[in-house]
Length: 329
Image (cartoon, rainbow, N blue to C red; front, side, top):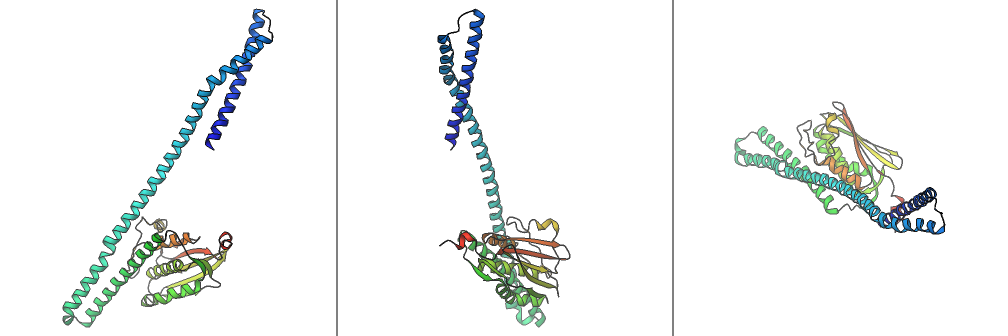
């Protein structure tokens, strides 16, 4: 395409220059003949036309060619500069993500194991010297450390599976009410420990998406809601249909999110983890993973929150397969 444009540009430029040269030559010749009193005949007219017809292309073509080559060279250089900037930004992001995961493995994964080893050592060496209350306290610490390690490993495995899948998904029609209930059953002991009440208002909540990925999203959002909701708080999972999409909302009566942190919640290269209302810790991986999984399923996630008043996490998914997908063999 570029060569066609260049050729057409050269042709029209040279044609215009040649036409102008001929006109100027004829006019100048006519004026000169008139001033000198010589006769302006066909021979003179022919000479005044043929000379610029030969000279104009010979002198104009290299110049026009150079101008067009310089123009396209500048265009190519601008594109290369933009690509270089884009690649540099992507490389910087990937390096930040890599550093983030090394930090998680080096610190967040190490600390729970230190607690586990320390508490189990005390229990194994001093069990006969500890009171029942002290043993129960150690057992509670061991359980909390185990839960933190399990959550971290779960998120790391989810992230690893996403990278290994190469963006492949297995969409199907899924019942979101069923998936929400499954996550509620798994998280029931954690919610009961904080006396947090979880209710649902889901009607005709079907979506066309990858079941495992959506299950991970729901589990992450409910886990976060429980973590940041105080004792005897409430959580509600509701749904509504909008423009061919099913929208799920997880609302909680928790502590809310500071405004300056909302924009960083879904950034994988940012450390946004904060302590829960009962001292629960996290990795900050859950929400970026949710966003990634929802994007792969043609959905998105967003949040509304006021610090001190709770949060509402929304995500949507297509209700049916897109026509170009459903009609393909």
